[in-house]
Image (tube, rainbow over all chains, first blue to last red; front, side, top):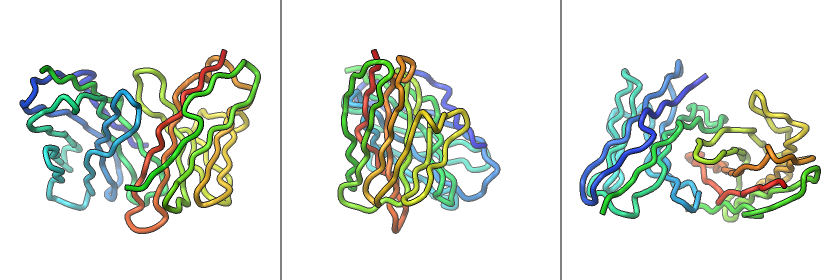
Length: 115
Length: 116
């Protein structure tokens, strides 16, 4: 079974600064996808960024980028120019490449933005 | 992006009653939908995978007779919590997978169940 580990229960960053959220995972599969989801107080899950394991290039979405280290099974999220609206729970998630399985989530990191 | 709607968003019921939660994909077809449970300040735990026209697949430890799942059409899956008890109180979230293309997943807004 796959596992996803987020070792930072809470992180705090000053507005406009950069923060990195850590995520490691364990799998024996070679084909899979990794995701970062944001869950604000409304509880709606919002996809932040997605990475296909077969792609070597790190995914980027505006201020959000990942550092995908496949050999180390590490998938960290970097948020640049942090904004107050970035405050939320962030979940790292794994999905098998076949797509038939649901997502396996990490325990989440609570991100606090200091004004 | 595609929209997934859950209803009701909040429900309060008495112990022993059954509650049905609906998950609808509004503008796309979803052959597969997933049901998650989230306790306060915890992560989402996959409960079951719902496939249109067939029986749901439950994760280990999830009672299939307690959490009935029906996926009768390509746009609707329902989760019925039968004979609910206070320990069933939780936040239930569904996600729907695009039947075509990338198979992207989209989440509903979640349903908060409180059992008195």
